[in-house]
Length: 400
Image 1 (cartoon, helix red, strand yellow):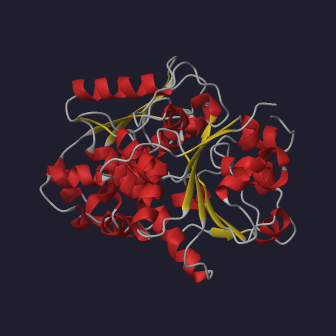
Image 2 (cartoon, one colour):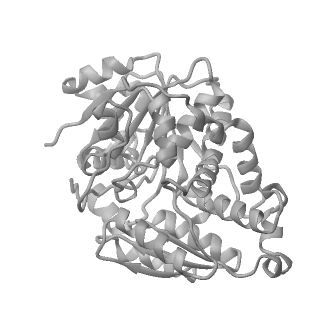
């Protein structure tokens, strides 16, 4: 069985200038935008008291994004907001003016015209971009890496998108989407990773993800938790992790919760960047085979990396069995706890926390994190069973 790898953050600190992207004001603006959607509902924050007691923790909360807009994943939050910000810029208006009703109106369509939104995805982000484009009367083109499932492709096709499973890995799909967007009239690439010269849309995507973090902070207060002691957040390119880290570091500027970034070990570019120790991002190459398809990304988002290296406490690289165990724990909860149907990319933090608290092999990391009966943990299940057949194989049949 492959081991869990980890490293504490001993990276040289910089000016932390990207934190402004995730300011409370910017996140509030994105959340107001999402609240204008008729499909908007705050997703559940599930309290797992019996699991927490069993593991020797104070409290354990998981944000269940399988309920987001009926799309079974959180990704639509980022893509929809970034697309709205792009349209607002093109028509010379503030995005605050472009509520859902305005965005989907014939009047705005005539004012803005027709764009083609390109993106690369394992499934969830592309489905979100395609869904938003469809609702706004725009076109979308989606490229998926080899190994992507037919179920995820079919879900994107339902949104009138042009979609293709390629023979490339995720990062190569990103480059193809960017290239074709540049060669297409009114083509726009909507990607949650940043590179030199491409920062605005990824920043808006991160702000869109902030809606989830903002909801969670409010829900914790209602549950009597003014501040979590620990936050576990998974990373692919790091946009979601940077969004959550940035929001909570801004919310608690003098006492940020201990934040742990969790990755799939086949695609652990953030962990590798942290382990290198010099502050520069590192890429992971190849096919990067992992069941955590949403985390199967080899090149860090440069904006997020700037936030993570200045604020995150620990970086952890996990084998597939960790995620699979998390799926089973959440899917078959302890008596009295609420079930959470969490997919491969959503359950890895739950699997990691259970391993740390139950297996003496991981005592060093558990102690370094300071996990004990006083710990109040927040984690995020970013997707439900987006690949139902794979979900059954893991949860019912015990694969991995």
